[in-house]
Image: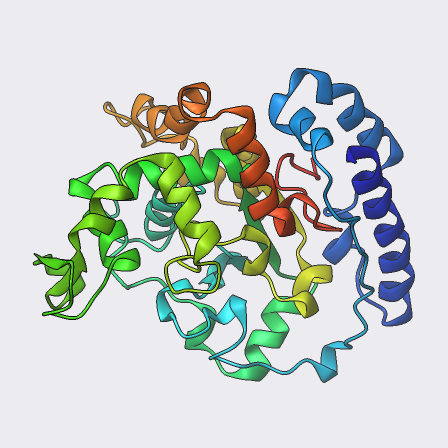
Length: 353
């Protein structure tokens, strides 16, 4: 299965090179997302030492499909409510824009999101950049710009368009540990167990400041989702619900609309987040001012290299064996088949650099 995935990617790359040439797209917009046959061979030789990659060969997944994007730059339309890069109907999910650095960063929750937002607030000169960035709301996103400007930012070879991925198994476990086991599971309950006051089983009223209003939830549901297997079962059963589509555990490859995939020119991965972030910051000219120092307890470390950052990034990875069985791994691989079998994005490995 892995070889089929990689060869499919190579076929897509060849088609995309022809496509970009026909529309005079600069090499810069595509070369960084390409891989060579040597990269494919390296990926194949590595699978024996990476159980999360190796396990993909043990299940019968549908074959990958390749879709050649045909939308020209001048034909791209923008929808604030529908386009993933715009955040759809969730304004907080719009891709972050740093005009000074010509950088568009399409962050994904549970993929270093907190530290990345702190980094970008620091780059924007926010004095309180060390604070929790999630409720600041002071970073510009694509939603702050008109359609023609968004198209320019998302297609111009002068701009860097970056995204980081994380293995779905690790990311799902991270979401569970954070949203189900911390704060009494209030976040998960508020997303997955909401009910109407007076209904049978509707016994718990949540009073959480950031929810803006109280919510009633099913107490039995709330308690049941305290185990990882039950959480997974709930997502499988409610695949089209608001719970299953929460951005903290929805498929990562849904973050970029198909029409913009050919223009993503920087891809990083959580397994190599420190090196990949340095590479990104050097590319946009922001490494030494904002990434090389100023992080950690003594403010002398680089971004993603401090002890606290390492704990945040590695906690779920260290607990994979504690929570996963072969049967649960297979179920997660099927649940996230969009991610594992995507013809371009490889969520288990960086493709550039």
